[in-house]
Image (cartoon, rainbow, N blue to C red):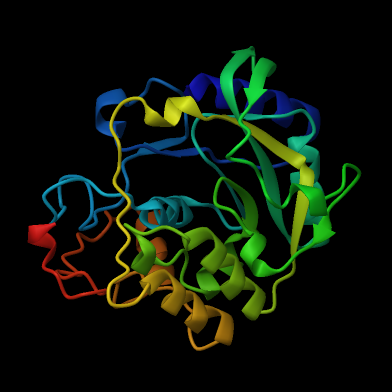
Length: 286
């Protein structure tokens, strides 16, 4: 439902985007099949990785959100990176909140509502049924008239606006967490640890279709909890400050890869890791 997003984006740029230099990037597993359909400045597949796509080492395609977001980061202009998940419609005033974040120099954490039976026309939500289970738990702590300061763990991947330099300082989103998830909260905690201020803004609202997530190809998330819960152990490291930068598996670091990509070079093909760091299982068995 890319047209939902694009129509709402055009409206927001028209209303609040005057003077901004904007580059649009769609990171799409099916980019090679759908090239040129939507009019993005860049319509690209996720950069080569071991979890999904033509270079995968696994037997099936797994969830790899960090890799996808780092793909966009490497194509972003200097300035700010606004990330929005698929199946989303930007609500009126979204870009006003984004501009205030840019002018104020803080990281904006957008709000979301997941809806069933979402109806959209010309980039505007006509109707939906709120999903009673999958809700934005941060909502009660926000305000309708402006942002509120929040801890780093309140950064959710579905909607955020962050300085490109801030993300490069922490080496982007942690690709250690591809296949697992929680890469968004972890990113926020690292950004806070690096001295950046984060604010949650209910005006920066996207409504997202819930049931359409389960149509078409599914990308598998796989947690492993034996003998210990690796999510918990890794989060302990992040919260304690022992882990301050993300893993992206490029020896030269994400900043250098981005420089090369912006110079027109292709993304390097990653061949690591070959084993699941959580229990040593070879990826070829997964």
